[in-house]
View 1 (tube, protein in one colour):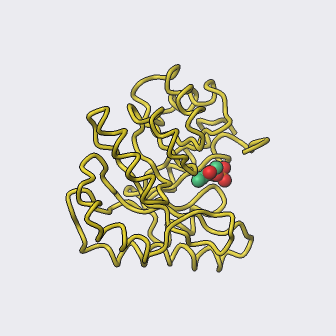
View 2 (tube, protein in one colour):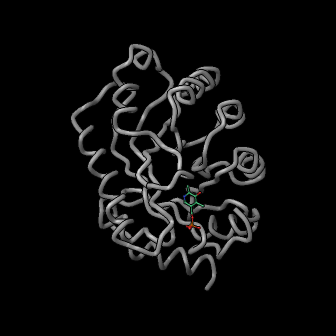
View 3 (cartoon, rainbow, N blue to C red):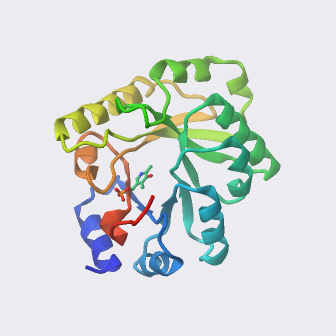
Length: 222
Ligand SMILES: *Cc1c(COP(=O)(O)O)cnc(C)c1O
């Protein structure tokens, strides 16, 4: 199947409120252009350097999503153009994003990454961590970030009941913050689900899925 066919197939199965981020990490710009020509505009990358290089050469109406683990010292390279940062997992990173967004006179949209998997390899915040961030005085001074929701990654397992439970956890945390809104925190997005588990994620309330290999084919490395 071609990239175009893969996109059409996935899109035809999605509820209208679910958006599809095409995860193009490690893939060449030719593959991204093929998806672009099929109408796809939102792309996800997990390395800042790679995203910057692709942003420079590709059409400027592409929305770039940073989905990988963030190093604070590299935020500055994408601050002028990034559309949504999914993997914010520390207050320190959030403050750095705010600082770089201010330099570019923009507000950068962010998602807080929740740790829902048991695996030690996965990054993320707990519900308590988020409460600490939101109730701190410093948070109210962050005028150049806008937290639009949460992101999470389920365990790498064949056991779909574990995956489902982890997605439920994320949805539950999302709903506990539904009534808490400030000028820079107003969650409406739940970013969960990848090629192997996006159908379960949608059943459990996902509004944004991040799909790579089911669109572009398998990767040789990550
Ligand atoms: C690579 C990656 C994806 C996409 O993975 P696929 O299994 O290829 O769909 C989604 N989310 C994150 C955070 C990733 O790093």
